[in-house]
Length: 374
Image 1 (spheres, rainbow, N blue to C red):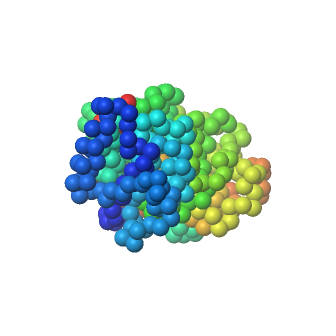
Image 2 (cartoon, rainbow, N blue to C red):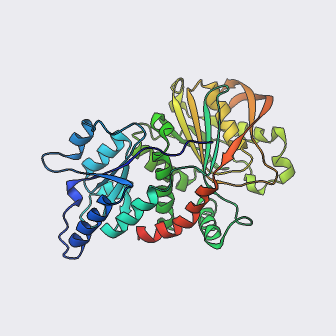
Image 3 (cartoon, rainbow, N blue to C red):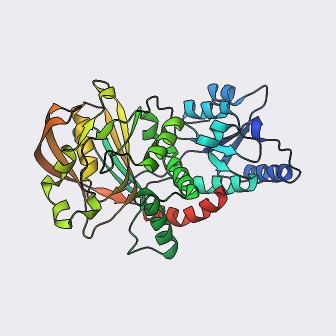
């Protein structure tokens, strides 16, 4: 089983967010800080003109460990840059006049009271719903944020949020609050998983058409910015349209050669030619069902001799009698950057996975979280 989170939650309040011109919000801010200081989940620190955020984090106190989660509550661009350089969680303090980039990339906290509510939700999102890991031929970790089924084992709140996710990820919904709740939930899970601190390159699994999934691209860019990723260019591209997997017949999706639809239509971007060897790469996708897309991308990265791979799906569709993740080994020969390559099937291996039913509560929590982001 995955280890439970054992670190601390360190909250740094930038001086930029401590003082509000509002006669209503300033007393509220004072009250929330007092309440947080009495909450055993948090260790609070404050910056000032003489001790700015950047200086505090350059000389991290001895008590802060590698497993601690650092949350910066700020309103100026320096707070964003410090959060990115230290791979910290960023809350945008909207009760003061927050600068543009902080609003763009931080998780919005409209009031001090809502800030506290968001913090309390974030500290409880310490694990993934689904986790599978294996080391052959390179260390690989497969995780899913949420349980995605809407037809069984779910209560009404979970079903509502799962349908809202699907409306955005698959059906093109544009609800910005649900998108931000999704980002907050994702960043909280990433912040509690030290493996993500190693990631150097961030990618999105291509959609079935050459047109990228705008929602996933937006999530990836938010994460890349906040985790100090340097290169925004797409690693993978779909150069030929293919059928949407959810519309393919079940009997087709269960065939070993079903993965070839991806090998015949996906290649690597020329911008990454000879630049992925020895790198740690993270890939985002909307849903994980049979794992064919992930496996195609994983095999391509293995051919590039990457150091480590992390595969992240927002939701996990569970199938009846599912007991393992199917790893599909292929030998790839040819030009990975033009699509002129051939992937030859070698063997399948069954990899055990674990699910955490405690993480299912996050689907219900997101409804509450969305209300605090408004």
